[in-house]
Length: 537
Image (cartoon, rainbow, N blue to C red; front, side, top):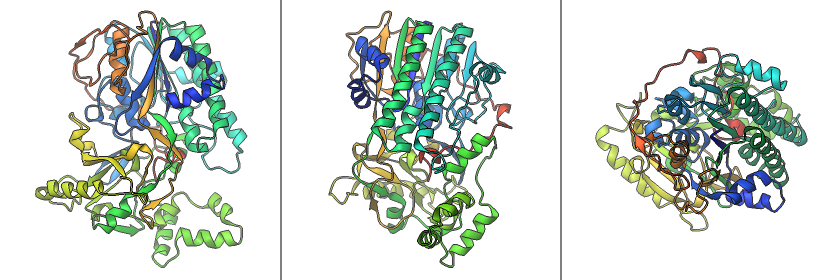
């Protein structure tokens, strides 16, 4: 193998260095300390569904078109797929030069590209994804005994113990390693790319529990060691989509703030934003939905809410008699979401649609189906919102935001119109943003551990310059660096540069990306996995 890229979701030096002290990740440590290693600045927004496509295409979201877990069409949404990524991936460009690839578990790669080699999609795809070549998934299941994209339980399932959940985490990590080793041995690729997701999920689900984090990293490192031994790559790279760390400040309920400023209207019984738990479950069960509509029971719950019978009141009543757990177990999905107050998107002037987008959308006339802000008022409304948000301070007197800016300052390309209108960057990524409509602007963070801007990049092997400086390394630099390491010119549309750890192969023009709708999604079911990580509220 000429080059191997190991993707470690949420990997970062602060986490690595704590694990070095426990001798928990010797293979990762050898790559980092035996080669060249440093922080890798992520993009805005630094979340999985947008950041991994940015890494493997080398372009910003304004060029590839994916900004979050869901894509919006007016007020409706659909979970993103590889069809939404509108730029060539590394493995596609290598394929043009006669170089083969094996890609395993990389997020937002379903449906897969048809290349010389193999692709097994990962996160946000369905539980039984279409793989390339056809029949690869069945082959893996025969060879490994089982192969799954997602855990065999739902987050928050109190029937599954923490130990059982951790056992499942470790099984999933081993599946990634086993699948990659088998396919690499079969296809003998020039380029290999394997991604480990549980290094991120363990922080979200278990609030950064040090013992559980160490266990996940130990088994991940063991799999990396096996891959290195069997694939014997000439060059090995580590890259992450973002970092991970504690959120020790506040949660800011931005839609509550915007409601008081007169921008957000609310209602009970609307569609609102989906919870990721039902999305996750539908993915695992193989159901396909383009968007979410309230069920009959959910509509009844919403109607009851008009008379004060909210999920919160019901919950408090059941708790006093010890039945709240039973109610949660048997309640229809999404009842809480439907019955409680939420943003009325068509009636509002501006709102945060999804917190992981890190921004505000304006309900613009002529662009949105029921836009209420006239086009001639767009600039003034946006300017006013930016001024308001820049002035927000936490109860401690600290600025809530490191930056509040027009989207054009962060994104450029043919898909800028899909972005939020205003980008809101939390101060030092210690402040948590919430899109929920709840009493009060500030509260303790819903998640005590979450994403940080600095991930990690490391390189070791043939022709890798260990003395090279990595200052300013950015997520967009990974793709051109990998291609340079392989001696292949990277695309002149890439926003990154070839890092000086390898000889720069230079840029050249490639054919524009041509989008073709894939037929493979019809039976797959791509909508049931995000609230498992708390990404959608």
